Amino acid sequence: MRSYGGHICYREGPAGRRAALVSGPDVWEVVTTEPDVRGRAQRIAAVAEYLSLGVEPVTAAFAYYDDHRAEIDAWVAENNRVAEEAHAAWRASQAPSHR
Image (cartoon, rainbow, N blue to C red; front, side):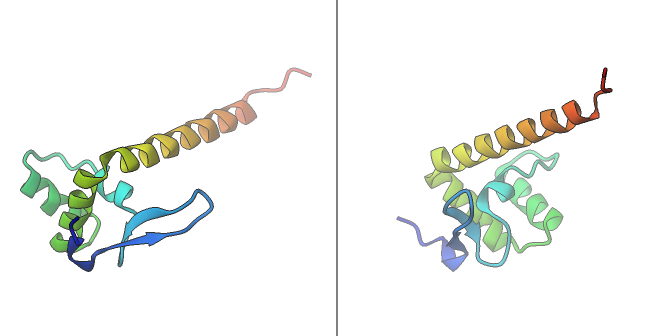
């Protein structure tokens, strides 16, 4: 198993344990950043610049994702589900009341 250069840690939270950069966001947040570039090296550089992170920790986040894709994809899916539910609830609260 890779060491990820000491850039990956685990954080506990209300939704459970998740992988994160020691000095930055969760791994799922890093790997879902979508710069308009092709190629892995260019994408890593663009994500690092966009998130104001070093290239090494971003590279570690992508390596972690490569090794734990199902875990990270599950986090992304759950976060999308929760966001969609919250948006639907907000939209429902904005609908005119017919009383």
